[in-house]
Image 1 (cartoon, one colour):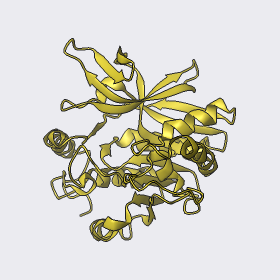
Image 2 (cartoon, one colour):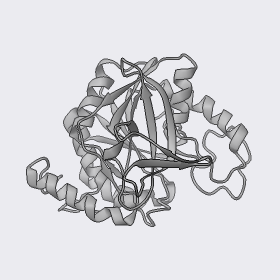
Image 3 (cartoon, helix red, strand yellow):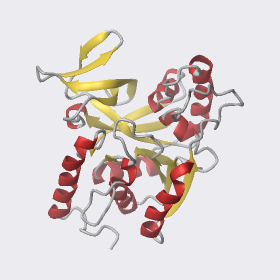
Length: 300
């Protein structure tokens, strides 16, 4: 059974200011997602599942269905605030989705094979898809997952702070800890720093970080569901709280259910967190096309 690519595309893009998931960056109007899907098809993935918000599903499908028809199987999952909440009353001030791990949980029952998870607005590079496919088809099981790891210094934005899951690994590159840092930037002293409630903290440039490129078996849905209910018990009344993938992944390890390998990739990451990132992303994609990495018309 071929693995599935799950694309997280339900975010509100509050910092970006528009629906960046469908913005054109390639020479023939391609989105960043198009390049990820193209790389996934080349690597051997058999299906792509888009996690989106139902209110923009028609516009979304109108863009991607004509491009992908006959190339890869497609399916859609809607991330609703009430999904998998166990009938709990949702506070009226809660408007944003519950976070990335809840988005993945919404795929339960739709994805029944090993799968990779990526962000819609990140470019991951061909090598990442090759390595993910190899892992998913040879190593992935209910006790062995993986993160495709990028060097922190290669994942920053020049236009503001970013969120990254910083990985700690043992000698075998098994994950021992992962911490979501939601305000990482290069300081005036040139050093990479993150800010939290306790202040500013420096972090190594060579730290391996999760860019939300992860590989799981379907058993991960049960891990997410249990932890999501625990999360809601503690945080349901916090309107901006989010249930991140690293929270569920960390529990998977700490509960002794298995290991999460961190697989380094040589691929160069780039993405659009802020509108000011867009020209650099477009230039990077055009350079890749010029180098022959992709055709000028991706789906031509």
